Figure: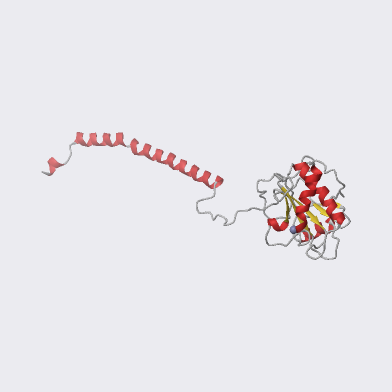
Length: 244
Ligand SMILES: [Zn+2]
């Protein structure tokens, strides 16, 4: 039985040959496996270098410090606006941060400074706004009590005066506290001239929709004060007359 069960000499030789023939198959398979493993390594390296690894902790709040909100950086040499055609005291304010081009102009917002018994200049407002941590004066114009119009931000730029409406409006600030005081005749005359010029430049039709008080935009403020706000319908009429 045992002799019959043992393979013969030629059978052993055949089995050895068969083993030799089959030997390259696992070697090739191992080599293929090595290539595949190498590719996996390369892929892993690429993922590590170009993308965050899967276990990287993403910041909860994206970094918006350099985000412009899709606005274009203001270039004073390129982004010029037509002259207003009224007397304006020019200023050369240094803004501590970038200014952006206002993408559209749909209206004018009227403000008052809100400081009683004072005739505050654009220069003082500029310094105060920098003190608040802002870029500089947020209004495009300041009208002093003698009617002098002072320039604040360049007309082409986005202002900082009416939250949510800065990208589409021009801001004019009249010096005084018109909750308690009344604007001077010279201030109202300059305001009418200036608003007429802005309406002409941007082809605005004077009225409720285009010439507003700050309180129409932001309901948490009384600006431009109870003594100036009721004068706005008269301003719409006067601007209409001058545009004719
Ligand atoms: Zn205001």
